[in-house]
Image 1 (tube, rainbow, N blue to C red):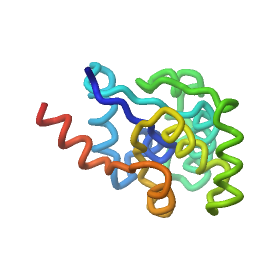
Image 2: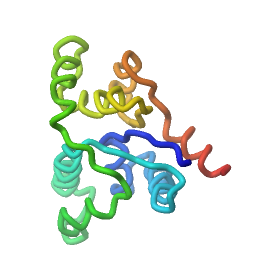
Image 3: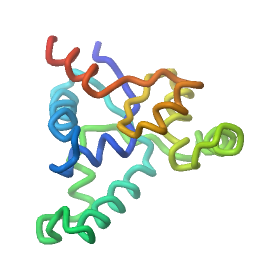
Length: 149
């Protein structure tokens, strides 16, 4: 049975933007997910964050607008399951109020906590805060493990 992980927006964005430091590892992770070696889940709100990050990348000349496909096609290319926001929103709000997360950053942490899975994030401040309620895995550790079979 394949390992299952919760991924946050930072991992998805790294997959799309070639100048992200973890781009190659993120691509390898998605390749493993596409062939069933790992099961990835992201909170559905990450779709909004990914599109927003792409718009910022165009505005900062990191990506040429003509290179972008439609948002639906971009998001459909991710081999991830999209978890609904509603069941975790109360816990995400609680984390935001008590533990200093933004509600946006709390969503994948709350999802990981709710389903008992590890979180995969490239966001260092989020990684440090997330250590309280869930275990956080590093992308290089996960990809190395998957590569070794």
